[in-house]
Image (cartoon, rainbow, N blue to C red; front, side, top):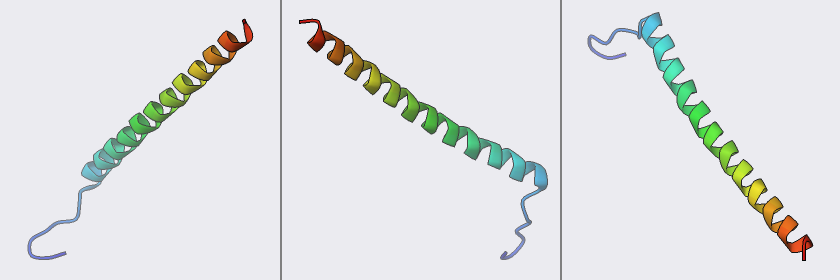
Length: 52
């Protein structure tokens, strides 16, 4: 560390870690939601093709 920098207090580090995890979780949920939508679309297309 340079100059007058202090190490991150434990509380600040924990809050930072929580924000990081929250952002990662949001991205993962968005990805899973996209996969669900893709599967629903594929199922809808499959059912429509087989009803003819």
